[in-house]
Amino acid sequence: MILFFHGLDSDNQTTKFTAISHPHKYCETVDYRCSDREDISRHYDELITRYSPVLLVGHSLGGYWALVKSQQHGLPCVLVNPQLYPSFRADYSELEIAGCDDGVLRFAYLELGDEVLDIQRIRRALDGGVAELYCADGGHHRVADLARMDSVVRAALERIQQQG
Image: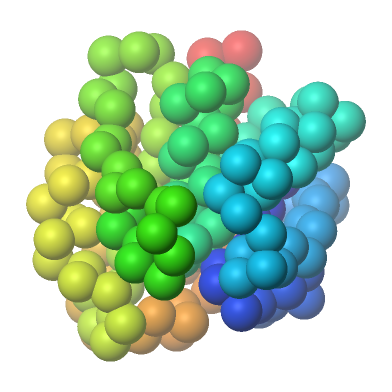
């Protein structure tokens, strides 16, 4: 089971979620603007308990949450153009990526043409802090190459199965 966290002002029908080819996946729409950080955190903890995912995937602000929950629950994750430095609300703090020395597999897929995020800052933060960092020239924040993003998710699942 893959648990997907969508980005700010998005929903469970985002193209990033629907492009994941794995048959067992779940995404629930969350209103990040109207819920405080602690309520969202509890909600995602409940989803993790309910679905027992083997992999978390998050795009943009959902990447923030995928990393937070990966660190808290020891779950592997794939971060897709993650927003590590949200500023839309005061109750969100900047994230620092934990190194791979905790034994949890973390992957990232970045499209370097992202026009919304400081993608070079995020790239530097993730470099050496994730097991695999996939970077694509061009693209944009909404993810231009959904097939490549899906291949990163599949590669993460294969690595998880190998570690079994």
